[in-house]
Each structure stands twice: as structure tokens, then as C-alpha cells.
Amino acid sequence: MRIAWLGKKSPFCGNVTYCREITNALLDRGHCIDFLHFTDDSKVNDYPLDPHTLNNNSQEVSLPFLYKSTIYTLPSPRSSKVLIESLRNLKPDLVHASLALSPLDFLLPEICADLNLPLVATFHPPFDLQRRNITSSTQQLTYQIYAPSLAEYNQVIVFSQIQRSLLHRLGVPDRRIIVIPNGVDPEKFSPGYSTIKKELNAERLYVYQGRLAAEKNVESLLSAWRKLNMPSNCKLAIVGDGPAGDTLRSSYGSEAGVVWMGYIADEKRRIEILRGADVFILPSLVEGLSLSLLEAMSCGVACIATDVGADGEVLADGAGIVLDPRKVISQLCTLLPLFALHPEMIHILGRKARQRVLEQYSLSDNITQLEKMYSQVLHQQKISLRF
Image 1: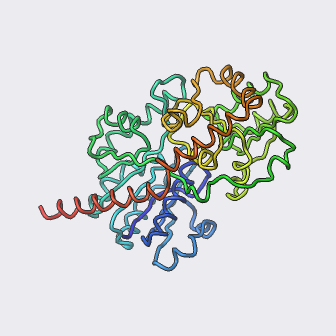
Image 2 (image 1 turned 180 degrees about the vertical axis):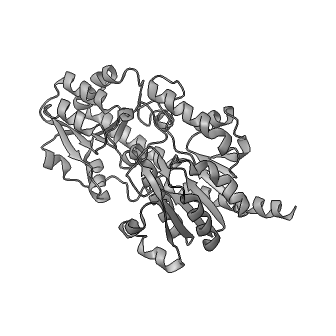
Image 3 (image 1 turned 30 degrees about the horizontal axis):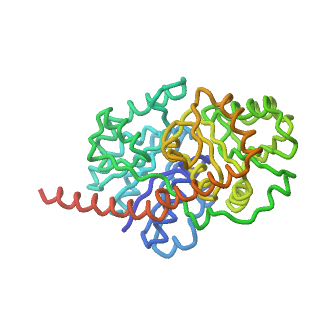
């Protein structure tokens, strides 16, 4: 099957990781993936396709843009023309858009309808149905704005039943929404040997791994750590960077036991850190379904996350500890010392976390669901073209 994948390769965010993991898995199963993304023509070679993609005529297409960030993309006036010409030349079986929150998202249904191409979307924006803060209210508005357009896509992929219910209430027909959660490779993200504790001189290692941005609420984690005055053999590793990085480092950079590791591009190094971690903490105010959380769970790490997006659903029934996003500081002040005093909790929760991934969030199973959905969409398209 030839798939035109419209996605992101920069700047780094969860959408970038999603695009990389899903397209590589599809390529491994023999599909041809043409990757269309917003970048300068001169920088296409900075994001090379994997070597095995060159064997099945996959192509990479640069779409012009005026501005892009981790949150949204502003295409240039030429982008729709470049996209239309590219799709005519590539002649894919279908188009899969991992939506980058750009005005082009709203034009895709008309473009693909004119070209008789079925259109699938993955809708990423994080959310908190309780709207417990300004950030979650903003994300709710994003869902409201997108819903009428998403109703025109052949299929919309979301990561949880919660998202599905939200979009359905906003007018997207239920038959057009399918739940295919994020998944990870449990063979790659697995428990194993790590020297990270030795490097950091830590007996107990707590880890946050992700972007440093307001919606990730890392400041609450750091505030709780400051209040606790944890023993010197306990370390908190902050892995990642982002717009809130400088502010957080200036406010908490000298706190005892906090290790600022910065953004780590090397996946093997990130896995090594997770394998050596005792506890993974995700204190976000809004989420979709965090790949970082699933990666930590798959590595057998005890996990704590707020009940936003689908993260609470992932950790339900004992697979981890779920926090109230309004009480992160007080709850962490209670929980973090418990892990230091009762290491048996770490092992029990780590085993349950990995088992949850194996049962419900393996990448292989999710790709199989995706292939089945592609086949159904193509079958429906053939039927509709007969009439």
C-alpha cells in the first residue's frame, strides 16, 4: 500500500515521535510511505528517510511554511499548491495526516475529495475534560474549532475513548472516529542493565522525561522536591528542554539532588536512563496519551502521572499512581518519600506497568489495527466511487 503521510519531523514534540515510530513500523511491514512535511527545500536532507525506505520508491516532499513551532504551523500561500501537485504525482492509495495544527488541516478534506483520495487523520491535541485550568480550556477550544472539519475526514484516529466521546459530543460522527492508542516496542523499551545510577551517584532515581513547557507542569514537581529535602542518595533527573527550561533552571537549578540532563536525542541513552530509573513522574496539566509515559512503563518503571488526557486511563487499576492535577505538589510530597522508604512498591508497580503495555499498548498490535482500518477505508472508497 502506498501512503502519503503528512506529518512533522521538527521541532521535536510528541507528534514528531509519533510520525517516526508509526511510519517506520509501516515501512517494516512493506508499505511505501511518502513523507510530506513542512521544511525548507535546503533542509530535506537534514531529515533523511531510513535506508530501507529507498528500496520501495518512498519519497520525501518539502512543504513551504512561514512559521512552525511545537504547537502549530503556519504554511506559506504556496503550500496547498505544492501539496496538490505532489499528491497528483505520487498517486498514493490514501493520505494520512498526523495533524500539525495548521490552516492546511482544514483544506485537506476538499483537496483529497477533488483527487478522489481517502483521507485519514490522527488528532493529537492534549486535553483535560474537567477543564481545571486555563490550559485545558484552551485545548477544549481547539477541539471545538476542529470538530466540523474532522467530520469531513474518512477516519479520525484518537488515542482513547475519552477523546472519542469528546469529539462525538462536538458533532463528529461516531462512525468516523476510531481509537488506536499510542504504542511502543516492548522489545526495544524493556527492562535491562543501566549505569545511570552509578553515574549520578544515586541509590534512588526519580525521572521526568519530556518537554519543559508550562503545560507539562514540571515546576510543581520541582516545588515538591524542594519542600521534601530528600536524602542525598535520592536524585531527580530532568531529561528534556523547552520554552520553560531557562526559567526552571534559574529558579530550581541549585536544588540539592536535581540533575539537569537537557535534551537527549540519542534514543539508546534515553532508554538507558529509563532502565535505571525507579520512578517516572509526569505532572502535566493537559495530555493526549504520553509516549514518554508508555516508554517508561514498558521499561518496567513505577509511574506517577496526572489524570489528564488518557494518562489516567493508562495507569488505572493499579498499573501506576494517578494524581489529581490540582493537588500535584501535596500528593508528590506524600508519595516520593514512600518510594524511598518502601522499594518493594517500585518493583510491584514496575511489573504492573510493563504488563499493561504488553496487553494494550504494544506498537505491533496498534499497527495491525491501523492496517485493518486502512483496508476498510479503501474498501469504502471503492464502493462510493461505483455510485
